[in-house]
Length: 253
Length: 253
Image (cartoon, rainbow over all chains, first blue to last red; front, top):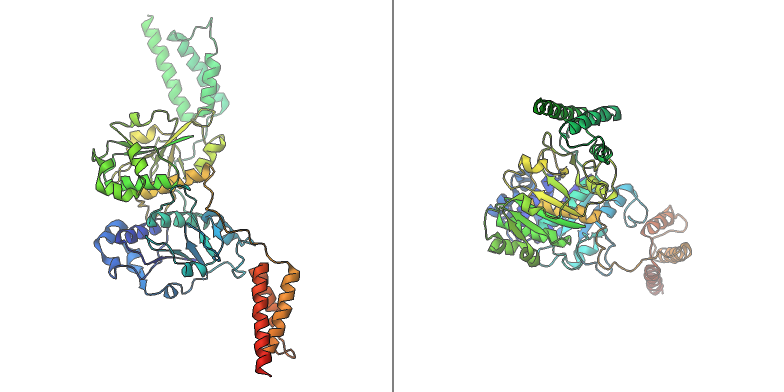
């Protein structure tokens, strides 16, 4: 599915760069600017600096005069606005809307054709005024990022970052970088053997009194159950117990 | 649950301001800076400009010399890093980790005590070097935001924005602003009545030939089923049909 980010009448060059970067980290690269304040915004120093390496997104970006020109090939339009508009499309939180959009849930897509959309465009208004009503009206949904009701002032690039993240996650997401190797916990037998070893060591260093053990060992058992040590960690812990025993033997020699 | 954002050795004042804003839109206000590059970073012009009204977060923020001093009252520490560290805590995507943390799912919280944490701290390294290994090691989880494997360069404030969003959503989220009133669809009887009215009008304006209707009305019926019009919209559509009929009558008079 083709995904496009459309910035309408953006005034801050830094935001354009930050938007390019926000898109690229989530794997999107189709950026269209409608009537930006600066005609050369894609080449301004602040733009390039804030893009921080997302130069291919800037290089591929288009500048057009009208919203119409920005929407070729798009068949599902998402406005973004903090406040719903009377007579506008339904207001939805991005996560819920994306899930419904991709699942073709009835109801969420009242106005859409019955196939999954081929192109989805996300429209962002200007920093100062947001989206014009007439631009919101043509959209299929109005996305509203749930923010603190007392402070909903999201930076433009931050809004793009959140929408791009939610959309990427809805599309299946990226895998995390190569994870740590699987960490199988040692079995209960290995854990019990280590605890016996440790108990001997604790007695040897005069920490545990076998005549009045209180509940020390059950407590340590619970602690290690929660920690679920690996075989390697069991080996380390037995090494510690062994060293304690040796040092105690040396001291009492 | 207390939530704290800790920036370690942050070098860009603008980022500190943007972080304060990113936190505040998600309803968080506890910011601690560990050894920032600028001692006066909370009062710098760029900071205040990028905070864009999140002045209370800046006013409440603390500057400390060491990470230890930043962690009072916190009992679950989340590192943030793009690359997992050998011998470090398990790497997790934020959403999954937060769900497990709040659900107390066994396995996800191997190292944590059995109660839900009382204080959760999110640690962010410097813009240039990320987190130091020794700071990662003390954490319970290493959060990694799933990004494009070929471009994982998230801006610091963007990373804070995404973590703050996922954490707020996991905590239950904010409601959307007052939604549009419920939009009950008209019933099938009302829709059928409108379609009959419309059919008469289409015949009257010589668009529909009753002798060769093709599949026009079933197609319109499907279209309006998808649109699920309200009673008010049915009323509008019947008004259109009525006007068409009147104009046709006038024309043929």
